[in-house]
Structure formats: structure tokens, C-alpha cells
Length: 620
Image (tube, rainbow, N blue to C red; front, top):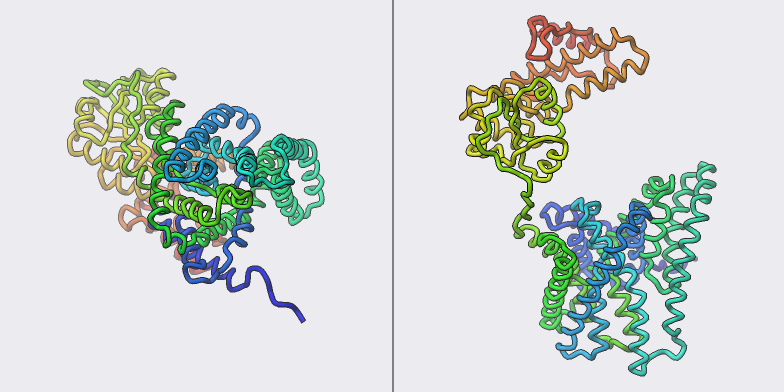
């Protein structure tokens, strides 16, 4: 007879999934982010909520693999050359932040009455920010690949490396207080073993992983490739853990070593489902681990400790960031993002508890402070981002629009407008250009364009830009709502100027036609037509057939637009060809007007096309 089931019961697994599925979409819809949703869901179903789980630590140990896999995926995006380019940020900026914040928080701990050893361990645990929280938030905001995001990743890498000397520091502090284990390794031996672990992972990654994946790929067994990807991640994490290092650092290093492999995208696709589920499980288990009885018993100290530690750490981070020439906004955002403890604090506090440097109540209180800080981080980041003033951009070399007299006024100077300007300049047409993106203005000047700073949605700027004297106003901004504002102003204030407008999609086209602009075109239409024409030729169709086909597509598009003007966006669907097999309507007549409204033949063909479509539908 089978024994009693052990581990995670089926009901508990369902509870975990239900909590995550219910909480995360709600919190994201409220703008609070997925991390806070997972933490709140974990607290709700944990030992201090609905009590569906009594031992969150056992789940946390499994869920830490989500952080490990997350770092592996980050490593896959971080090629060795790119990592080498960030060495100054890792060992300069990262080390400075850890040392400065550690010193400040240690001082706070001593001032609060802790022994120097307890203060240092508690402070350094809080200094190690949560890689999982920060990377998840950077990903959600799309900032991982930005320069500021890369600096944040560099700091996190240094903090992961810092766990090694910090664990060694715990052993030293225990020995100084006469509590060190008799069989504890000396510090030099710990460092040597850690270096050997790193060297072993690098050697295997450089000489064995690619040949292994080539061999497995030739077998054609997809499930074996997935198993091999998991083996690489977990194997590297295990080697690092045995060597006394961070498991996440091992996975990251393995990812870096495979970042230039031809199997990189396959590995990322194989790991992604496991990473997402386990990372969510990690945040759920952290929420469960918040000991509300400890918080209730020492709520004043824990709440005050959380706020003081976060404020002091944020101040240290801000100061270091400004010292390393970060802008005020980037420094403030980094301070808000990193002003928390992280998952490595639990490792450090557990080691200190085992070594006798921390006692049980102090360790529990410090862990509660870390968890509370992790939960508060999304709220702090939201508040800082919302209330920070917009960063001032240098206006060096940029002139504001004033007394411009161009025959044509171009508003917005992105890729679309740059092409539009070429035929005008080729014929010597005097143009004036305004743009609100200072970086775009500065970049355009390097290519010989004089672009003025000016917001086309402001009437005074349009007057200063010469809109009242221009023969044509060309609106090339990439946001349809902004284009609509400019069109409204221009039609009301400058009725003599012809209005040419870049349209975003068909809905925008219909709005522009309603505003009676002189000319509009969907930004991708002509390029897509040229693309389709070239594709037909390469597939073996003759030039004559290709031209006839593209003319038919153009006529159908124009006829559909005419029907939409009368019947709304959903009208004219019968004129679109789909890839569901239906009887093919006959080609329509070729336009003779070059795309400036329907010609008489096309206008007369609308009724004919509708009748043909009805007959085709009946035959089908």
C-alpha cells in the first residue's frame, strides 16, 4: 500500500496557482506591478493568512530556482564583450554602493543598540538588494537594455559576488567572538574553493557545452535539449553553491558563456516557462514567509527599522550615483529601486544564526524588515516616478523656433519626415523643421539638417515657426493624437496653408478625412505596396501581372476607404482578401488618378464589387 503523500499536495499546488492567477492581473491592472501581487497573494494563503501552508521555507528553497533561471536568461543576453565593457560599473559603481551603504547602515545598527557584529551582518544583508524584484520591475518597464538598466544589472552582479566575502566575514566575526566552529575552513581556503568553482564553470562552458548541444541537436530529440538546458542551469548553480558562492551567479555565468552559442535562442525558449512559474513561486513564498506574529510583537521596531534602513540606504545610493555622474532623475530612480533588502539576506542571516552571530529573535526581526522592504519597493518606485519632475535635457546647440519663413513647415522630424524632406530639398524648396525631441534635433544636425525646437500643439510655436506664411504644413509626428491636435489648430488658424498629414492607421485616416486635410497617407502603406510588388516578382510572376495585381489591391483599398467614410470602420470588409478559401472576385479597374481620391471608374465599381461579393457568398 502506498505511503502517505509528502511534499506539496495537489490542493496546495492548486491554491498557489489560484492565488497567483487571481492576484497578479488585479495588481497589474491597478498599476502596482506583478511583484506586489505575488507578495500579497503569498501573505493571504500563508501561515498568517488562510493557513493553507505551514512551512513556506520548503517552498522557498524550490522557488529560489526561479531566481537562478532568471539570471541564466539575463546571462544569455550579456555577451562576454558586453560584460567586459561594464567592468567599471560592476567593480567601481557596484562596489562603491555596497561599501557606502554597508557603512551607513552598520552605523545605524550600532546606534540602535546592536553589537558591532550584529550591526554589520544586519546591514550587509540589507545592502544586498533583491535581484528578482529589481530585474522583474526593469523587465516590466522595458528598461533592462537601457544604459540606466545596464548599470542596475552591473550593481546586482557585484552584490551577487559580495555574498562570498560576506559569508566569510560571518565566519570571521564568529571566530572573533569565540563562537566559530572548530572545523570551519580558514578564509583563504574559502576564497580558493570559490575561485576553483568559478574556473570550473568557465572551463566547462568554454570547451564542453557547445559540443554537447551540437551532439544533442543532431539526435532530433526536443525533450532532451530541454533537459540539457535545465541540466546546464542547475549544474552551474550546484557547482557555485558547493563552492560557497551564489547559485544565481553560477547560472548567470553559464548564460554568459552560452550567449554567443548558436543554441542561445533555443535555450532561452526552453528555460522561459520554468523561469516564469518558479519566479512567481519565489515571490509567493517570500510573502508567506512574513512572520506576522513577530511583526505584531515588535511592530514599532520593525516598521521604524524598515523605514530608516530604506531611507538611509536610498540616501547612500543617491549620493554614490551622483558621484558617478548619474543624472538627478536616474539617481533618484535607482535609489527607489535598490532601497530594499533581498533574497541573499536570508542566506546571510541563516549563516549568522548558525554561527551564533545573530540570535533567533534578531534574525526573525531582520528577515521581517527585509520582506517588508521588498513589498514596499513597487509602491516606492511608483511614487518616485510619478512625482519626480521631468529630467531637463541639455539644449546645447539647439535653437527654439522663432521668425521662421520656410515655404513648407515640417512638424516632427523622424524617419518619415526625413524621407519627405529629400525631394523638397532636391528642388530647392525652402523648408522649416520643428521637433520636440532634443536628442533627435542634435542627431539631425550631424547629418546637415537645421531643426528647431518647437511643440506643434502650441499655437504660439506655430506662429513663430511661420505657419501663417507657409504654403504647406506637413505633419509627420508619430503619435496620432498629437497629429489630431496639430490638425485642429492648423485648420482653425491657418486655413490658407495646405495640410499634409502622416496617418497612423485607417481609423486615423478617417478622422483626418473628416477634418478635411488636403492629403493624408498611412505611414506604412506605400512601403508595403512596394514590398508586395517586389515579392511577386521574386516568386516568378511577370512585371505585367505584378503591376496589374498591385493596382487591383490599390483600387480595393481606396474603395474600402470610400465605404468606410460613409459606413464606419467596419464597412467594406468584403473587399479584403483573406487566407480562408473563398471564390475569388474578379479584379477591379485600374485607377488613373495616382491615389488622390477615387476616379470615376472606381467609384462606379463599388456597387458592382458588392454585387459580385454577394453572388460569390451565395455560390460558396
